[in-house]
Length: 226
Image (cartoon, rainbow, N blue to C red; front, side, top):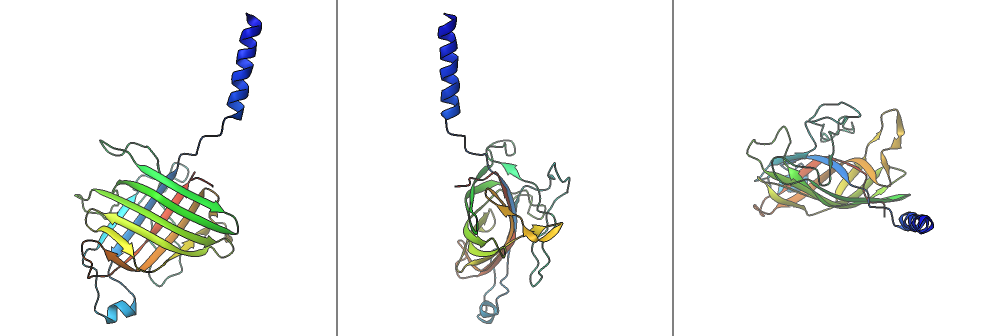
């Protein structure tokens, strides 16, 4: 009887060792602003943004490991100064408010070129600059980043209660932040990235004759690596 129990326990151990590892539970946050375009081409045509707004997930509560308060910085037009505070992250499945939960579905893979995909980053709009009546906000994106330069392009789609869906008409500019102690080291690796985005030409679903610019920050960790 003891031998049978030993064999059974050994078999369970072998099966457990052979089982595939569970997917990581994604963590992420973002903050963005939808506002009038700065592109001279759009301004010359008389375009403005009919539905400006702000969205954010992961602030004002700070990250435990940095203790930095929110809200995070946003990239500044015409400046190469990178944001310092990216805000905190939420975890996929984490309780959001009194009901519902956050969704964080992301992939960061590659080596010399990184592919970043966010299929779902959604939750209550916790931006300090959002209206108190603002409800849910979300961000989706696909893009690629050159590991040597920390720069890339992609498409970033955002949404708030006020703006509804805002979709890019052209590629967005992506820039990975550098390490605070080493300006030559970019904060991107398989599964995680800290970056900014600027999308100069976007169409809001509720005002399709207007044009907006979106700019913001994205911080991801524990994403899928394949």
